Amino acid sequence: MKIKLLFISSTPWDDNNSFGNSFSNIFGGNDNYEIYNIYLSEGNSTSPLVKRKYQISFGEMVRSLKNPKFKPGKEIIDEQETENFSERGEAIFKKASIMRWQIMFWARDAVWATGKWKTPQLDEFIKSVNPDIIFQPIYYSSFVDEVGLYAKKLTGAPMVGYISDDCYTLRQFSLSPLFWIDRLWKRRYVKRAIDECMLLYVITDRQKSEYTEIFGNKCKLLFKGGDFNEPFQTHEIQTPIKLVYTGNIGAGRWKTLAKLAEAIKDVNNGETIFEMKVYTATPISNEMRKSLDIKGACSLMKPVPVSQVAEIQRQSDIVVHVEPFALSERYKARLSFSTKIVDYLQSGRCILAIGWEETGGIEYLRNMDAAITITEPSTIKSKLLEIKNDPSVITDYASKGYRCGKANHRIESIRSGLYADLKEVCKGNMPVIN
Image (cartoon, rainbow, N blue to C red; front, side, top):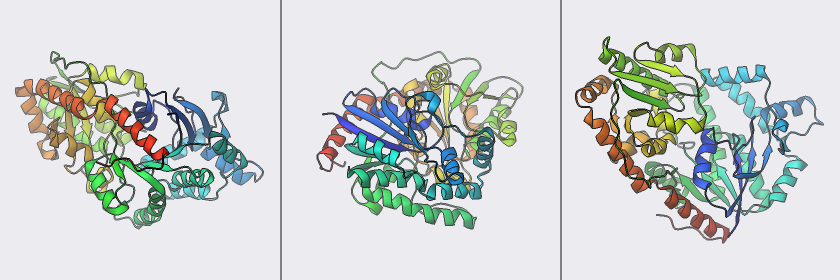
């Protein structure tokens, strides 16, 4: 059975970003999908899985305010047609992202709230696709959810949601009234989108439990998968012991990495026992750079294409996963499960997971005994000393992590289960919720 899926996303479906990488993993390897992508940002949807793509950029939205005759949005046939924000505009929003300027984000939301994106060409694209399912990654961005609801109303197709962060509950911490105004406003849009979903995929057991209580019995776990068909292979631990981090360091993660880097410096004490490298595409502030570029302990590396990441992980002895400890930041990741965790499990390398114990990924790895976990910053140095004195623990946890991946994240099982679910949705039936 061929299923036509229309994805509404904040970013383009590009295998080099988190959204594209995760969804190519989950939806790849199945010729029974036809995939279409409407994305609401600059850049290009480059995945070969995407049959047709439609872009509405923020730059076009701003232009439509200046020129009422201009209609934002277009189908992208050639890469040269993609709309890119001006260098000045990119610089402003890059700085806003680093500084978390709430007013800037509200200004962006206000531009989208004008509804200028509702154009005849968007309607024509959606109707020509005639999707069987609207697949809606649900974001903490009201305008993305609104476009998905618009497409659902226009087509009458059932909607399936996917939510990988806590975009709804009030279990957050902030002393800023602007934060709470924003939270209370945007959660209404999140609820509207989830209420319209026939099926909602979630990312952790805790999220499934909490969201089922709020939204009813339509929540189901969906992880990223990996190739675990080969037997686990041990490798010789290097001298110095090499640690690597690959991925986003925003939302306070860089502060945890900085604690690890400082602990490595203390343990090395003039020697080179541990050596860490951090690969990230996150915009870097001067404070981040100063905290993570520590001679003899940690190096901040340039971002690399996703095609190189797996090899970088395999060249290490320990792959590092971190989550924030600070009260103001840790609740943001409470229900999250980093997509790179499965990559780490597949790498066959020991995972060192550091973060607040109630964060989704940390909780999962600890419960599965699939990683060396540290849930108190004060114990980072002592744990490194334990590893230094008994490096065999690195091989032990590399094996445990790989076994966890093989038991719970085999891509063949994930893809077949997903396809079975979506066939039921097309028939108007609720898939089995376990």
